Every structure is written in C-alpha cells, then in structure tokens.
Length: 591
Image (cartoon, rainbow, N blue to C red; front, top):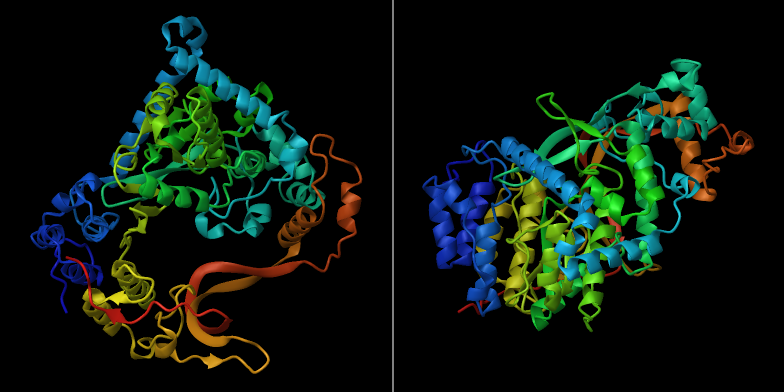
C-alpha cells in the first residue's frame, strides 16, 4: 500500500504506520495531525503541542500526547530547515551565555552586596558541599578509571572505536595541556610504551599528535534540530574518563546513582500522583557549564585537573577554531558526571536554604526531580549560574511529570512511542509491531489485555514482515528480535525435564569480524586484566615493578575477535524462565 503521507524523503513504512496509529487513536488532535501530514503541512505538525493542564482523563491525554509526539523525532521529513545550522546557532548562543556567566561569577565577590541574600548563601553552601564530597584530588585514584570510550575520537573514526585500534593502529592525539598526562599514562603500561616508541619515535613525547582541541560535529536529534557533540582527542578522553569515574563514585555517597535512572522515574511517577514533586529539565545544560563556575564551586586541585585534560578550543564543521567559554560539552569523558555534581549541590543547597521537609531529590545529568516548593528559588540560582529551564520539558503544576524518558499522568505510564528513523527493513518492522502492541497494552488501562483499536495497524505492520517472521516466538521483555506473543500464541517448547524454562527463538545481529593479533591486542588484553584484578600502578610515581607484574601474565593472550560495522541477522535460541503475557485484544473503554 502506497503511503499517503507525502513529505518523507525516501520510501518507508513509517508514514503508513503513523496513519494507522492516528486512526486508532481517534481523537480530534490525532485527526488534525494526520491531516497536517497528508496535506504537506509538516511544520504545523512539528510545532504542535498540548497542555497537560487541560486534561483530567489519562486516556484522553495519552491519545493526544502520542499523536503529537509520534513523528516529532523523525529525521527524514523534507522540510526547509537546516538542522545542523539550527544546532550550531544554539551552540554559539550557549558560548555567549557562558561568557556572560564567567563575567558574572568572576565579579561575584565584588557585587555580593547587590546580589540577593539567597543567591550568595546557596552558592556558598553548594561550594561547601562539593568540597566536602570530593575531598583531595589524586591522580593515582583517577588512573584507575582511565580508558577509551566506544566511539570516535579526533583521528579515529567511529567504526574504529574498539580499543584495539586506539592502543596500536593510530598515533594518539592529545592537546598540549594534556601531553604530560598522556605520556605518564603510556609509561604506566610498558607494552604500550614499547609499541609506540618502536613504531614512531624513541622519544615518547614525539609519539603523539598535538591537536588544538576537539572537533565539533552534529548528529540527528529530532525533526527540527540536530545535536552538537564534541569529538575529543584520543588521550584527552582516556584521562577524562578517570576524572568522571571519581566523581561518579562520590555521588553515590549522597544518593545520586548515575548508573540507574530508576529513582528519577519512580519520583516522577510519585510527582504525577501527589503533585508535591517537580520534574525539571534544562536547555543545553552540557554546553552551559562555564569555566568560572567550576573554578568557584570545585576545589582548586580538582579544577586544575579538569583544565589540564579538557579541550580548551574546538574546531567547528566549517574549520573555524574557537576558544571555549565552557568547561566541556557532550562527548567529553566527565561532562555528565560534572554537571550532575553541580546540579546536586545547587538543588540540595536550595532545599536546605528553604528548610524543605521533603528530602526527596533525584539527579541524572540535567534531569532533576525536586520538591515543588523549591522551583522558584532553584530557577533563580540556576539562572545566575548560567542554566535555563526547558519550559517544554519541566513540569510542576497539574498531573503530568516526565523524567529520564518516562512520562506519567496521574501515575499512569503515558510514555509515547517515537518513530525516530525509517521503517524500511525487518528489524524496524519488528520493532514497530511490538511497540504498537505494547502501546495497546498500556492504553487498555488494565494489567492484562491490549486495546483492540490498535489491532488493525498491528496486523497491517505484521503483514509487511516476511512470512517466516509473522508468527510470535518470544515473550515481552526479550527485545525486538521477533514478534512478541502470549504463552498461548507462541506455545513454546520446554527446554528439558531437568531445567524449568521455555525455549524461544529470535534473530540477532552478527557482526563481521577479523582476528586481531600482535602487540595492540596484547596491550588491550593486559590492560583489561590489570584493571579487573588490581588497581593500576601509582600513576604519580610509576612504580618500577609494574613491568614485572605485566610479565607474569601469559603472552598467549595475543589475539581476539574485533567486530566490524558490517553485520547480518542470525537466528539464535535462548531459554526464559518467566513469561510475561500482554493479554488478548480487548474492547476499548475510552469515552
């Protein structure tokens, strides 16, 4: 069936699936969204929003909310918007904002008599909290968290993200300020040191490529704008991750677990029921952490360490070289942890200043859940610190809350599904079919059963799959490698008489690979083994017997399988002990 939604760049099933979902939702807003897309008025659809305060029924809100968000992140619309240019303009505005914040914070002592008492008191309390939590900085401790990220770096393409490439295939890149740390990091791993000096120069300092800073790129975010990411030099990222891991461990002591989003999501649900909690999101938070603010809030030894390994300058896509007013941006190895630390200190200080009896607070990057009574003062202190509330994603009135990707209305999960990319292959069709069924399950309003209004679009999506994939073979919770079905639909086979479980089959990506050998793989293996068994050597002292410890590990670990970007889908089998049923299709009770 030919899609009726015209303004999509390439042929895919996303438009017909959207048309079916709009029809299933059946509200006036959903019909209006469908009409806008059919008539080519894409911008009308993308700028459409709804006010949660105008709803008192969760199903009615869910239907309209799903309609306006379904294709809001779809990147393939042919619309007259240069998304990269929009993102870069926002990036420049953030730099200008950081410049103003730097001037404001640097003059704070001189202007303190002209500042509100609350601002001075909260900032001083935040500084004290951070100093007390962080303690003294130690490069020895930081070195235990050194490592490479999985993505691209300056001089390293994303497809070469495996540590094997980064340990041996390329001459490592670093900024001048980070050079001493990079040299020390390599000297701490003798085999890495030997590999570089044998291939590039006997002087280890000549084994690095000095770059001015990071490389600014844009990646898809939604239909109206891209996202700015700064690709860091290889050795800068290696060191930055160590600082990030230190901050992450310390935040756990105050109840901020950056390895889990559950606390934010749970409190967002409670806030939608009680109304006593607010969910706050900030605009361009990663690009708004100014250098002077970090100098003011963090201990001197910590801010010095951060400045050594950060990228002081950045290269824009057009080749322009800029000097940053911010400390770091998305793509840096400690940005997420640093902004979480700052927001925790500011929020907890606001709560203490107001003597707020409700001590519930959740921080995950710029996703904040805080008592509603603290919102006004928090907005003021964040504004002084250079941060801006995202009005579209911050909620403290009414029955709706959203945090860390979960959306709740009166305690009901109303998280919409987003079609973020083309639905043009079996993987995406499986995702779409399963997402529609899960959506129907949540719309039913019960703990069992799927709203039958979505049955037609689900069946149409399933019909587009190859015949061999149209039969459900897995339960919900095992991903989207096959169609999700109830126990009676799948009729799974028991694994065996000795093991309580059922055998299921689905497809999974199998990447092309090659056998990597020689020194780079050995360095990667030894580095990983050292980090698993004992702390890294004393980074500041470079203990002499470290080479001896490496020598005790068998040299037989000299090859491994390195994945490539190419892949094929392969059928695999697994055993599940739990079977979560979504239930049959049931009659809708939406008024």
